[in-house]
Length: 244
Image (tube, rainbow, N blue to C red; front, side, top):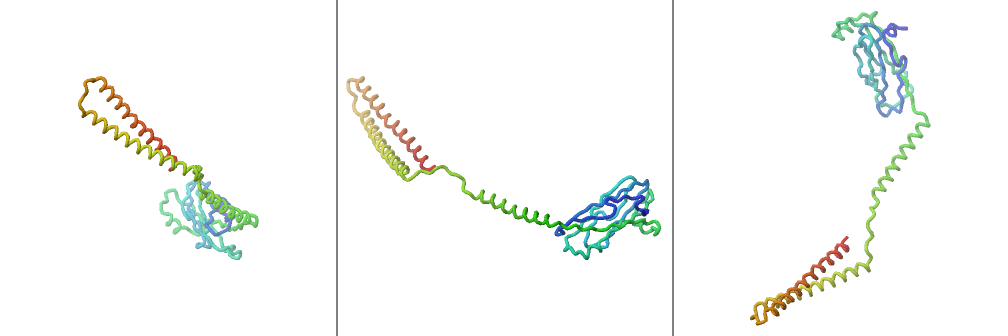
């Protein structure tokens, strides 16, 4: 057992495992725990620095504390012959209680004060069953998306349109109503002209008869106006039904 293992606990203790495929960044965590009553400075080194990004790659651990080191394997083409070249080493040294400059600590350190522990890198490739499942899931996803797109492209249901016979009937009805409105308008105008002429004519001796006649004409003149309003309502109803 090394001196490092006596004062610093590593999790995992021996191996760093990376699970493929390695087409994207693969991250594994290394937990460093300091169970001692002294400060410990550490450095994380690797034999393949271009393949990995380590954060943090150095620092200080307080007594009774721990720190998580993230080891990120960059995308690469896996080569079984290369895996033996990937190794890590955690180097540590005790620090004085009032230390502030870690670079000075490492610079002034003696070889006997340095403690280290080596870690192997293990690459786990997905099994054939996992590959088949991934392929099937990737194929199923476009099918689901395509079905969603097809469903969204379907036309929305619309209200039942009128057939040709009903449309012709509506057109004829509208034309008839328009003709009636024109006739009623002409009659209303003629009645108004006649009323004006009657008012301008000399009054007869019988005022009661004259007044009654005028009232009868006024009431008869108001009747066509009412018919015009009713006809306009019917025209608006049929036109609205035809347009919608």
